[in-house]
Image (cartoon, rainbow, N blue to C red; front, side):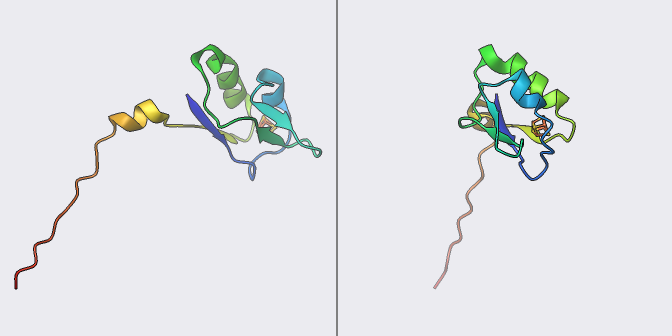
Length: 84
Ligand code: SF4
């Protein structure tokens, strides 16, 4: 699981830091800061999902992780022949 935090949406309720303090801290004004690179191991998924689902402004967003991206179809490269 991978997440990102949209700090422009955060209203500083602090719920995320309560549910998953290893991944969310609060700055001096009480707004959330993502700790780490957003990659969440399976063992911490439940706590982070609780934070994600309880965030009242939906500032925590799940993003496709590397395994999911690997399953996406590759972009087909186009070639252009130039005749002279
Ligand atoms: S729960 Fe949402 S609104 Fe509250 S501090 Fe965390 S990210 Fe911000």
